[in-house]
Image (spheres, rainbow, N blue to C red):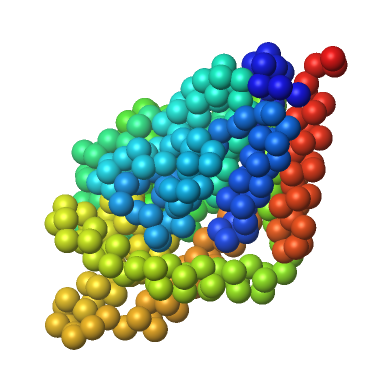
Length: 337
């Protein structure tokens, strides 16, 4: 295999998994093996937090050395005040895959934002974009009437969506009402259209490997170790620097990232109480608990993706097993010589 292989024969490999499952190590190991065999690759980050500049420690962003070893994309592309949607990711990822293949390299999609993976691999609903004015109007109504009343309003125009939402699920009720008011169509109609499109085949051709574990205790221990390492490496100071900018707050997407929100909330408490210092024990407890919840959601998302190829991430040989499986896919994709 050589870097001169036709772009049409170069496969796309994806590595997904919950936080702390070893995705970065597996990707870099695969990249090293490919390099030894004369084949280059480039990594496309599939992570909604890594897009932000100045958020390095709390996101476990690949180090400068790791990024220098293998070209990385979709890292540090936005200021934390900006937002980045799944639709934008799909557009960027599709463009990058084409460009990487044109350079004779193999695209590696690596990350844990499952919404991005599903949007890329299965297609994305062509729903209307968010409308700040409509959202503000819905929020004002909810403040006056309460979210259960808004849920009842949703049931009148979109009973299918209302039936699957809890009366207090403010975020999803707001979005469903927004879609109805902007487009005149119920949210459920867009989901039905997506299902019809899915029945016609995959939206994007990529082999998806999934790092998973049945041993939650193993993953929980990894999460705790990583969060402790973040604290030791200056995570608190990183969040303090972001707060000191003066233009960020908890309602922007970047500050809703796991870990950042929990540290920010404790700094808010410290400021309100004029406390001499932040309760680091509480920060640690809340940060680890939130990260565990994130990992649980990621695993649930993964298990809803039947095309994935699971690999036990708690196996000491997980990275090499993934490499062998990926190399098998890559070798079979190459034309006979």
